[in-house]
Length: 390
Image (cartoon, one colour):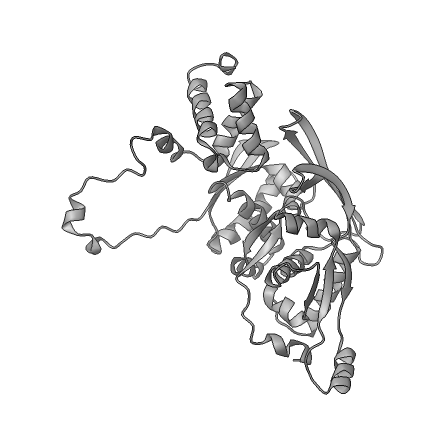
């Protein structure tokens, strides 16, 4: 142990960190090793404001010396965000020790880990990200085109600096390292376009063999599960556009890699199951989050309680709440999108729905007018053809 880590030995390892939402949707470099210096990823999606298909693109360019980012850099980036959160997000410049950063991401703090950290920080600093109509600016509520680096500078203290400081001051207190976030990523932090990440679970997933795909899958699922315990993805978009698998993979190869990653997340207690819908190129991957349920032992239930009729989950008077209790967020969003596309409902209703969607409010947390709008459309759609509903 060098003098660098002495002040951090008594610190508690953080339980939670932060993850920037834009960097979850796209892969930060390919999964497999490559000699190329550029990676381009496209997402074809339906823009609700423009009411048409648009293409959102990320181009990642590495340097001649360091090349493209590697999957190990995902872990270091998450550790850097956790340290920023631990420091209170007070300033773009974050001071740290290599010992502490290793603690946060679950690495053994030794010479080999320190070398890996330094190489990873060099790759992160040298990588250029070009978002073409793909960077969501939460403050201005619109997608933008941005070209930037994640960090502007990195300072790594070495053993010589520690010795010089010790001679000059007579103290063995550590000389901290530092990195500085660029303006674009720091603005996203300040705008709150981040989500809380369970660092304990992250470190558990990271300990597994072939952890690169499970880590990226864990992050995108953790974002999707915010709305509902079930998440559906187009297979190719998930595997190539988010996880960074080779675009030449066949659907069966993608499913094989995805199934292995999902199996590890199930063993880690995060997922309950995974299944697939469709065939050929039209395959959807579906995931259900594991939710622990606690039940009281039968012997602790009194005779008086046992004689009572079963309670309903919601008040019988409120039929809307009863209906919502049986729905998933992903289904509500699908029905809502269909209703808007055919012009269902009044102009006032549609304006309220669009306003809440633009603010990022999920339907289950939306206002009553919006929820009634979805239910009415769903009930009519089950009784009449879609054209008639419009």
